Image (cartoon, rainbow, N blue to C red; front, top):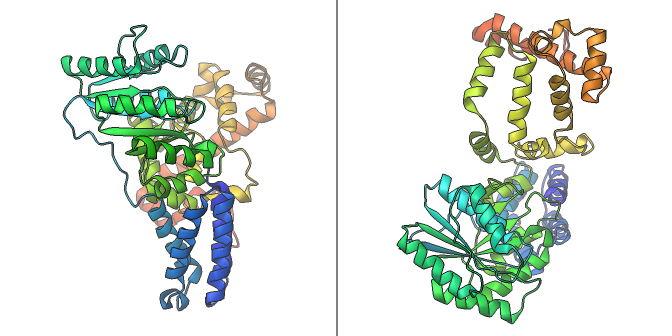
Length: 460
């Protein structure tokens, strides 16, 4: 989402880094570029003005003017200003400090992902917070909306309020809260109806439900792909009913990201959660400092570690690692690793969380890094017999033709996979033979084939 903005800001800092000293004129020129980059990213004009003013005031100081690395100094100031614009360091958790059952009111326009987000939050609270959650659909406008939420509740493994035809949204809300109190629920999530656009009938309905339930959280769900329309929607809902938090959906899309940067300044409400996919577990806490780091190419190592902890099978990973160190790694293990990577999402998404990888992706021409090669390898391995997966050395010409035909690939693809696997096996055996002390002594040369040269160096 933030790739265009990230690329332009990196260009500004690279230009500043080439200067020996930084003058006020340099700062003014850099801020002009930052302003244009943010406007192009669809950030609201008042937010851009305030952001640029604050950065300029801090940048035109002796601390920066006398700095050895002015580009880095300005990048640090921009990073701090981005964090402030996004709501300050640290995620803002959902407010569950109320008498049970805690009502959470979901509001937003039709098509913003409100119902799916309700299911995601229910799953998150049930699994991570160990809360007993009840889902209730108050949407009597959209056909089958209540049935959709019931199906999502089933997938999430939480109860949903039984559907009673003919009830008004306020009556459903009252029944949901009564059920929550009577059956000992911790949280009741109320999914309201949306409209294609903001109108007074929608606001009146939400106000009535809010007055009936007195929610601890009124979460506005907005689609990040709608750009400035998302900001306008947030402003209207906040003025009409008061929003305590924002959930941004489709954060994995290719929108320009300005809505996220504008949301806190325009509404005063923090972005609490973000959605990035249709799966029910594709919901994350919003950390302003991590998003700022990704925008500026600083990565998000903490986010990557959390994603790995949530998605990877650590027992299987340890088994594979042990086999690799013993030199017993086979193609079945390689296929298991591919499945583990696939659980974490796209390779592009993983690379975006590593510092400096934005420029590496640009150097590669922004080619599709998502799992096409890995999927091909998985198809090839699936077309092999058990014996071939355990002992790849037996795969000769006739076997390669059969595997290629079965996997929809070519013999050249088979050869490339086998070559990569052979190189990996050789490297693992070398590391195992050297041991930890030998590895420490030889450093990177332990990972290189014999006779290979490092860039500009002698053979290892």
